[in-house]
Image (cartoon, rainbow, N blue to C red; front, side):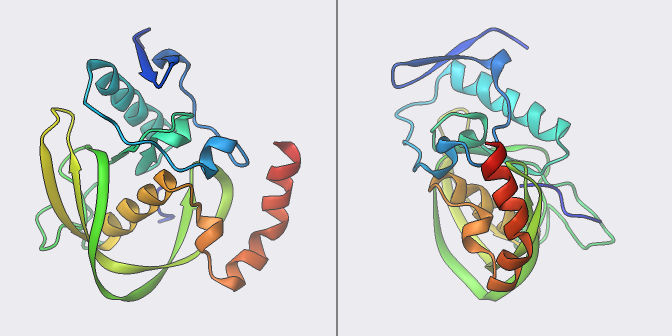
Length: 201
């Protein structure tokens, strides 16, 4: 997920495909991997940890707050998130529920549950859809269960921007993009930019 407006050669394996982490790049629409449901990870490996660290680097360079494995060309059920605290926007890692993170988080094989609150509109952007933003409706609070980089299960009840980012990145694992979830008005506004990406792709 793009931030709101206001190198090693280690190899990893997804199925029988070998990938050099130094070659990882953020892929853009209409790359086929972005529309494919990602595969669950059987176990956490050192190579997966290397990929997660590279994903965080790419996310920071792109000034994003979340990045899913399909966005770097890997059809894995994994994403990374880091949302800084912001007193002005009332974002805190210590709120109940938290609306920011106390450093980067990695989610492996995440499962979402217990949406809370009304569906709320918010203008979202995406690192795989450059220059495209649109209004997306999502619940304001969500619970996510996942594994961390040590293979340990954890559960997080998230609110605010953190909840939205988690849901946005989870969508990537399902092959769903913000252009699939935008309100009708937003879809019409970005239609020409989407078509331009499809032509260039």
